[in-house]
Length: 353
Image 1 (cartoon, rainbow, N blue to C red):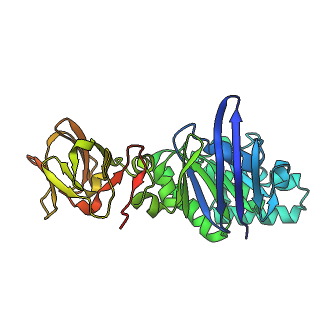
Image 2 (cartoon, helix red, strand yellow):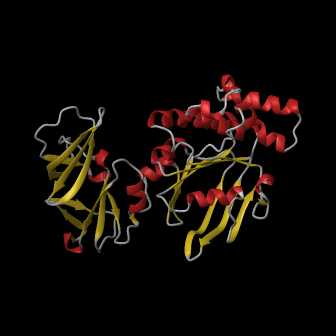
Image 3 (cartoon, rainbow, N blue to C red):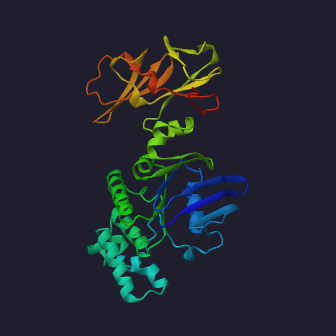
């Protein structure tokens, strides 16, 4: 069992600062996902943990042992890459055993570990094949199997599913989740895919321009976002964010498209951003206290659900519904209880009383 600590990690490439005062603690056996847009610093963090990238400032600790100056082979870490990184001239058995051979393990130990990992990942019948004879999903299983044989204290995954098609990605998400439950070892997983983050993680680090926007459980980042960035990043379609100028706020009441929103418990005196998730909007009345007239611009039919793109007096709004029949939709409604408020800087406003 292992614990990992990041203390004041900073990293720049020339004038470009890619990681800014990164501080988190990862509990023993925890699955943590780093997620964010391209260029936010998530892969750089992973490379610093593995020893493939130097740290400008700060410390990374594994079980209270500083890793900064240890070479990669001494860190007890295994990494699974997006590109699989399999040796094309070796068969599956040889690829999975290569790291153990470099550690001078004896032949019986190597054979036992390779076959145990192959059985766990259901690739026992592939051991004699070369990488060119494998599908993308099989290659990824081999790469994971090679990591398992080393019995690392931390597994690092760098966008391992991005080269797979949608069906295989879904299948491999389940496999990785099952693997984590079986071996109960720390896993740090990098992705730009929020579905992977939400389904795999015990906790999620949401990064933006090298800064932590939120470090919470999947449920918390969805239902209790710290700011507009998190609110819009998590959820598909993204949360509707509507700017309301100061003139619409009087005596703790917001005048919102012919509706009055009472701000009991909030201290709002300046312009504000109102947030409502598409899935919290009803296309039927349902006794909700906020009712709006809309003009439907487009309906995307996804089979089990539909995404409606509409407008309210030139304000675009997205609606997600499982209703099968949508005809002549002109009104929507939602409950005030599902509204989020953010200040002019995008930070979440919470009730003070």
